[in-house]
Length: 204
Image: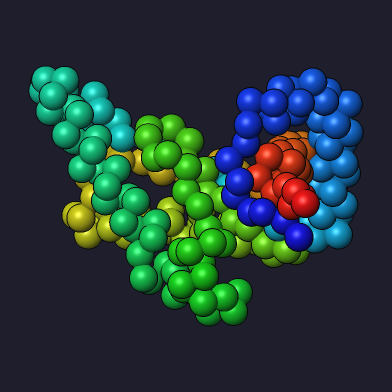
């Protein structure tokens, strides 16, 4: 029989602080649990494709102020982001890879913080080759769609794009083994401390 959520006393806290062997052992056990989960149920692979985006600020606004440059970059960046996540591109990827648009936007795809220079297109999947193909297809579709929008006058004509990485992409698990070890250790120690401090045997 135990009392749950009994407020800890000062003696309880002192006892826990002195129990350094307990904390070391708990950290090791938690890390082992995290490692086991990593190998039994590994996180998905993540592939990264890269598109170089050049806004050509000097040509687009040769005589304007820094403030106008800022608004230009913000406006064109927002347009490109909208293209990257557009229904047309998402539906194309959904059809090609048999993945729902909701899943693509919700968990499969990620876009790095957009700015001038390299835009990174990430794709996650349990299969490394699928992750690579998905990231590459997304980057290629983004460039093709953006060039079409430039030709139509919807994106500034001075914006230039080039896929710089679409083959032999780097692939690694979306969460590292070290992350699992850390979470396992912290989780086990938190649970152990909760049990030791808040669940006590009932005194007779």
